[in-house]
Length: 85
Image (cartoon, rainbow, N blue to C red):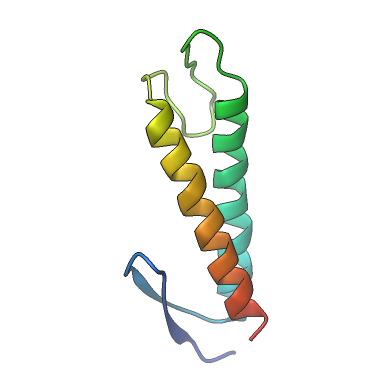
């Protein structure tokens, strides 16, 4: 069993993880990013629909979605850096 290490996202959120945890986080964050990119790329006339993947039919602003995309891109870069160090 690998020893867990403490990591800190640039947002200040900290967590403990080993390499397997980081790989899982990388996959999960990539899925979140893909969902937001898909949602952002498929919007027509500001209509948002239930997607069955955690997103609801509530209308999100473009600014919110763009912020989430930026957040998950940053997280992915940070996790990849930890995995490669």
